[in-house]
Length: 364
Ligand code: PHE
Image 1 (cartoon, rainbow, N blue to C red):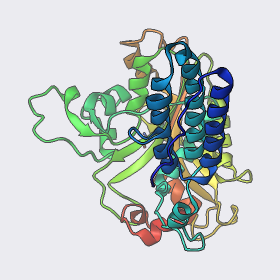
Image 2 (cartoon, rainbow, N blue to C red):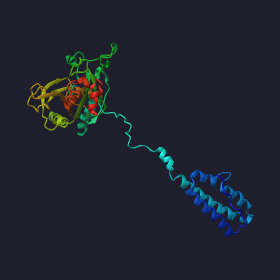
Image 3 (tube, rainbow, N blue to C red):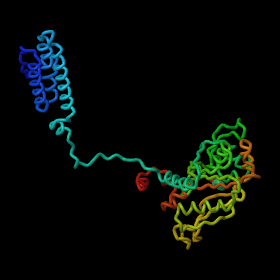
């Protein structure tokens, strides 16, 4: 495109200048909507052939000294107008052709991306944790590779004590040179985190501890050498067995429905005294008796008890406030797989770990 040139200016009085600039302004206003932004820019602001270049080259140059200021002021106003028009033109959005090139067919199916989902064990663990969070419990975790001291000794299983045999332990090799309390093993339960928590903070404590545990058990329909537990610990002044019963009865109703009943049977754990096993009324037959509950109407679900004073004595080595004369507490531990199997009607614990997508997709 060749630019039409600007007319020659012969008179430099105010009226003549006004007329000359007004006609350029009108031209610019007409060009802006008619030309594409780049063409408009070239025509008006182009370095060599732009009209504004002509104005400063011809009009301003030709002006007698006393008129230079008047020409310069008008030039400035015109330049601002052109800049403004160009900004408006390029901000006006893409052309029709550009829009057509970018158009997408919104009737085509989209690209499917697989979203991850919580594994049923993690989901169940979170559900259990949230029941206790709602009661004001905080959440803690601890290491899976644990010392003999935390897993056993401080939980009141002395070295050589037969209660250790109830939890067939996987130990880390070549630890013989270490003192027995420092030897490493894969934790057999989440209870060591009770002690780790008490060493970190004085009472009161209300904490739940979800986590993975390991036992050298042969795998079968209901046993796996790796499984998960949620531990609970509550320590304060005047905590009683009825607090324990009320808390766990509430938790079981929250997890399995308000019709569920609980009952407590005497049991033994070295770190609780007295200890109990908690049974819930069979969620499959409502307590009438069926194959799942071996016709008893009850299903055993978790272990619990009042924290043994011997455990507080270990905690008091680091935190003297764990004085069994002043405080008391309860603890409980439940198997996550067992609860998930009951909730979802799963009969093989191995299904959780086989990685079969047909199984896992049911929980998406
Ligand atoms: N740690 C016990 C187990 O794994 C369960 C338990 C926890 C029992 C807390 C009582 C109190 O068998």
